[in-house]
Length: 173
Image 1: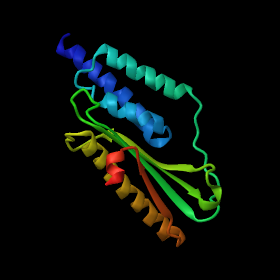
Image 2: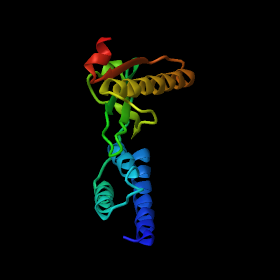
Image 3: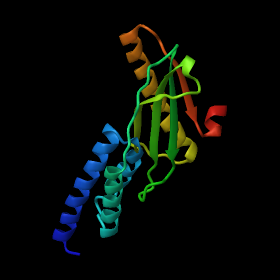
Image 4: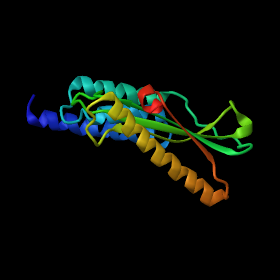
């Protein structure tokens, strides 16, 4: 392919990735991983990558999806779940992500409201799964306690914070 065709594909890929990122940030946490993944494909921008990104975008736009917030009964609780994918990108970098849910102590184990989510390529190099999981968990702790402090400042009530990871080596230490 000539450089003009590559630049055109890169431009199209950036547009599609930007739309997926917008959807993932605003209302579709399930698309956040795809936004990050396809953003790493922009420099090469193959036709196959572009088709796959458009398919994700079309599926994301066609599905009915909503986030529902319910009243919080009892003491406020923030549940945060972190995860990482070591070396999951084509360049060997890792993917980090977490979600934070809020619910009331009288609602357990009932419905909760998803109030924060992120999935992104790690800015730091991880040399092992444990390192990637630790980076994700540290980021999760930072964001969750920041949210807890914001809730405290607004409501005067300090929520309980629960942090979860699927990395056994991390939570046993």
